[in-house]
Image: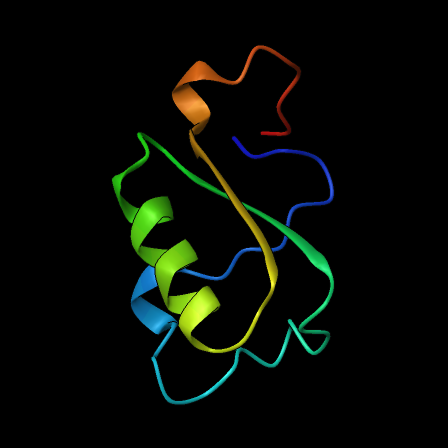
Length: 70
């Protein structure tokens, strides 16, 4: 499952040389998560290195206490 209205951008597709097309605003608030927290931390670091300034890694979806979309 995923959080409603989430945008899927796999960590493996984020490079340190090109910003993801779906994230055009470097000042937007970006909440990053994955299944357990490891890949989200990697993705958050890459996004910050690309110039995004409001990146928040909240770890794994396995600890998300709210409803998910399947």
